[in-house]
Amino acid sequence: MGLRLCGIAEYFDVLVTLDDVKRPKPDPEGIHAALRALASAPDAAMMVGDSHYDIEAARNAGIPSVAVAWSLKGIDYLQAYSPTYIIHDMRELLAVVGLKSYSEGIAVAKN
Image 1 (tube, rainbow, N blue to C red):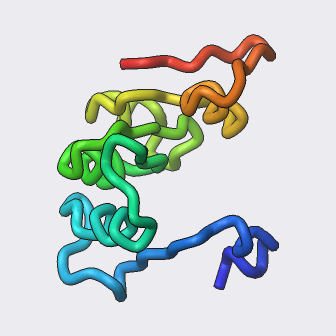
Image 2 (image 1 turned 90 degrees about the vertical axis):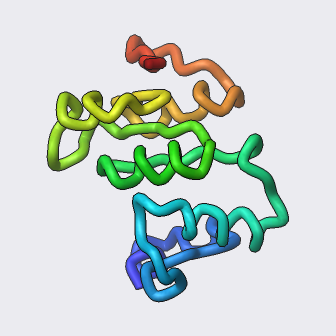
């Protein structure tokens, strides 16, 4: 598994993969499954992704979406799907979730 190879598996409490759902993104089934497994609610969640399927799944689940500007399709492509936020550096996610501001000159864009 890629998360283990990268040494970050310990940072994930729940994984929901394509094998775990009947209806893949943009259906919100996977997001709902993760929320149930975490005993959480949509108002405490957001979807970070690099594809329009991620943005649409978030919208379908009623949660904010965060598009990453380094998507292979490009940020202009993702903007067409109106993500809630766009980040250009993963550290910007800290500001999006309100943990701290990111002050290295890269602004978080809220659509």
